[in-house]
Image 1 (cartoon, one colour):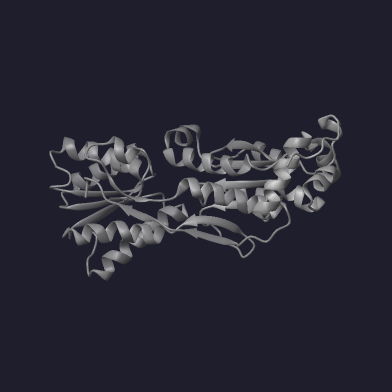
Image 2 (cartoon, helix red, strand yellow; image 1 turned 30 degrees about the horizontal axis):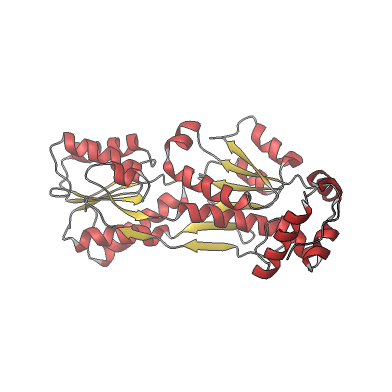
Length: 340
């Protein structure tokens, strides 16, 4: 059925007219415009049809003035640009966040700051430039994010470094992921296991190591080596060189990221060690890196795209006055390929 046209230009069509044409309440139209999921499929279809028929364009400026809202949210990444653009994890996270935000009336700002010594990013965000923020890849040294969280609604990607009851976060089950990777190596009969961790200043790095140690302990084994890394290929290469130089024998290795595993594969090949015959390798992320290396990488899949979507949805729900869960934990999955 075609809805009657008001004959008005788009700029004069009101939200009340859309509601009347769709046969729903004004608040339902508002929820649809702002991307809320708390709308029935029938109402959603009716509102979208009315918006198309009436050529309705939400008046962002008028609503922002009335509510003092900016209709903008920020993604804050406390990393340097090299890490941000070099790690496929961030591409997946941003894609997920943007996928959800693009369905709302908000725009997304990106702030990349490995630290904020002059408080430029912090003061920009605290000035009211955005209505809320998503913070990913945070470290124990990133004190400036506490000042951001004190000024606006914040959702963390990963368990916060200093977890508080009021915090909202979306994480993957990194402990279980570390356990899955390690148990797979043990099930293959590899008993002399090493690991190269993520940064121990980050909950994700700590949790993956915890899963590794729990699986080792349950099997009555002790690791032959535990070396620190920072999720980069260079760190993985440097860490496995330290293990090789120490003379420790190992037949399996859990790397806390696929990028580190890539660096490890290069160094093992240089040392004349075959994968998986001499050393079985399991990575973490299931990023495009896993299928671009040879041998292809057995790894733990974390749903980064989904994590981005869920984080954005939690923040938008908060901004709409809703009550999302404080903690959302997403499952990991072992993906078996050639390296183990």
